Length: 143
Image (cartoon, rainbow, N blue to C red; front, side, top):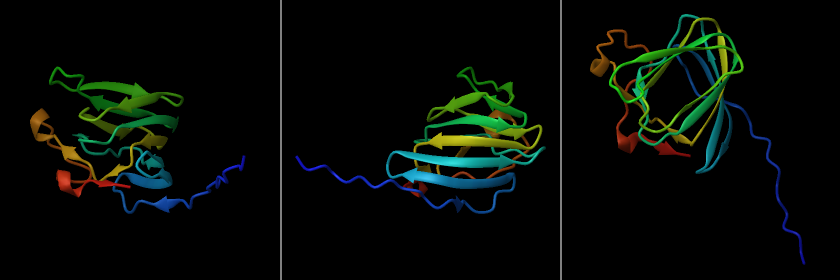
């Protein structure tokens, strides 16, 4: 029986482009399956209050202190403060926002759906609209 040759891959780390809240590095993409990122969020910065249509994401806080704002289905925002060593999971449709109380580093694993954002500040009466804008469903890219 002939052994199948399997290539081990050491991907190049890519910068995802300018982020007003810090830095996003793409560490690896397994096509149609998984993306692995390193997020650096500057103290006092936050992303948009949003949900994803398709993206399923989770993260692990390596460094810093982070507030997660989320809606558990009751139509009201709740907050949880995370310290290093804490993980989180945002399934598709979960409203969430991350705000750094200190400089933070997060390892994020998700499905490789890029450009999948629906901003919902207006629904919750939030006037501060930091972060990237909403995208339409046809702008979502599966890598």
